[in-house]
Length: 158
Image (cartoon, rainbow, N blue to C red; front, side, top):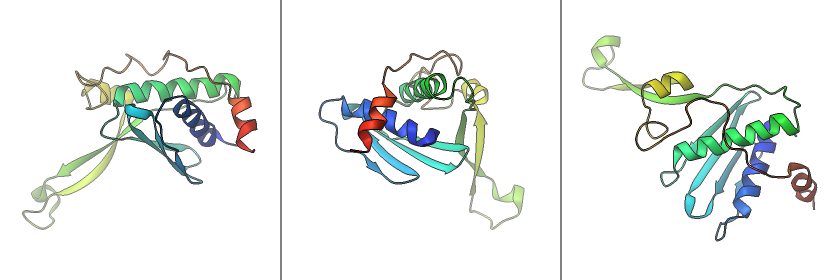
């Protein structure tokens, strides 16, 4: 079991403790997990070293980021003995002006950029930062979520 699967397990465990939460939808490299009235998150394993987190419109993005960070720290501490490291990047879609790149006039193209945690924070990238999203000041030291991953994984096979 890899980091993605462990992260999904922790999310499902947290979700199962929230009253009124529907069952998650899970595939090998993608999951949709509802946290009751707090909203929906989507986790996708892009490759062995990339996990994409998408937050539903009704979910507070900054809080979600804090929870996921806490879960990664728990996996790092409890399972990986401190050997796991990660970098947070934010996928941002930006319009490219037609005249600048010589494609058809009047039609803007969109390109995807990855912003570092520091860049996203500096730009007050919404909904993660700024007045609506007060994410922790740095990408470490988040509140820890207490979940016994060992017993959860053992019961997963039943």
